[in-house]
Image (cartoon, rainbow, N blue to C red; front, side, top):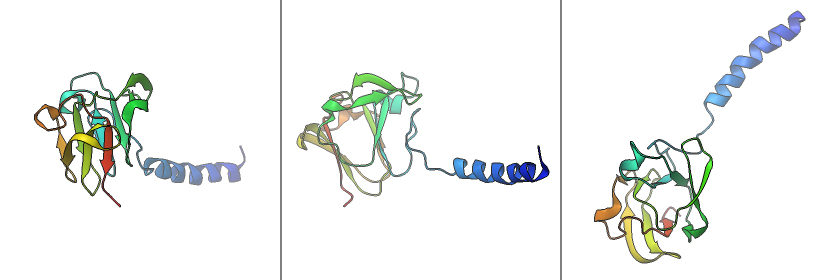
Length: 138
């Protein structure tokens, strides 16, 4: 290897590592929920100690019937999300509302910015009843 090639590699490799490390995360398994996202989980307490089925959102979803859960390793589970959410986190800077029916109708529960609910059973939306998600940031 020529000295100039070696020098270029030594300079470029650390820069590439910094750029890759600082790239924004796009998803959030294992009970995490990254800033700027609304995370829904199939299990209680944000899937802690359970099968890790989750999904995150950055915009409204008028009908979750066509959504599927992701696994902890970011692969598609092929399991439908409609009427299957047990816990939720809101990491966006505005309120979000989970609705019982598609197109924002029926019973609903609103989570304020930076809040979460580890068991939706005690809310108007209830456990395993969410069919649409309204993120109020406009």
